[in-house]
Length: 287
Image 1 (cartoon, rainbow, N blue to C red):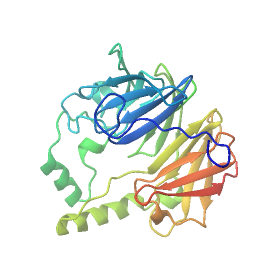
Image 2 (cartoon, helix red, strand yellow; image 1 turned 30 degrees about the vertical axis):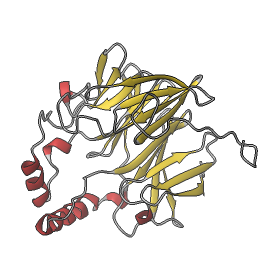
Image 3 (spheres, rainbow, N blue to C red; image 1 turned 45 degrees about the horizontal axis):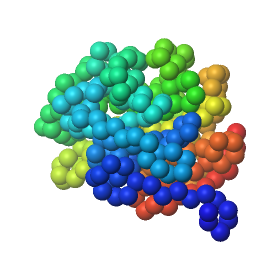
Image 4 (cartoon, rainbow, N blue to C red; image 1 turned 30 degrees about the horizontal axis):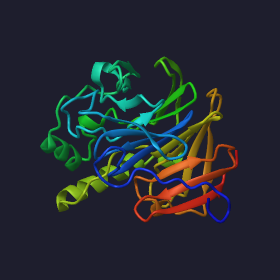
């Protein structure tokens, strides 16, 4: 316990042995256990609520697109201690797969936006950026989240949010693009053309930075052009409406492009994370 009476747990010492961690890229709370995703080792480690090791599962390669770099998927979301949501990149005409890492069963869901690209060609990607275009390999990028029996998938290149059942059946979809994003892709295009000429890093064409879901609905931290306040799109569980919330007191440049965002369980507070500097910003959640 800390001085305020909060329970503090320590588990997974840094290293490569059983139960040890190298780089935490995901953390989920399930009935009677915590699940931690270690990106570097592609390991999924379960601990009980006292912080003691229950089990560890090492996945040898990306089960959805084996051999496709990166072999370890960038985006992974767990819906149970053994079921994962992994982007499919358009494989089998889908957007993501529901993968059981114990039984190796896999169900594909969502309708792909572009064709499936089976290999990564660095020259083709850089050529697309130099022209201010979206590389074909990035057309099917999605952010994935879940809550109870629901799966949410946000299409980064279209701005479409979709809700699925845990079995992968589409329930509803909603376009989350807001007026503040009208010139977003034009701005990214110009930046990427300039960056390509100077040999500097390019930026993904993406309508969102992060997403979080709970039993009441889903909230998406939107990517907007420079000069706009931090903007979040919120859709209730039934998909009946779209609320756009701005936070003028926060500077979106503080979070960088790959920011992190979450809403408290009681829907009263929002939290924004500056990943690079390790700073958390708290704000009232007005819904």
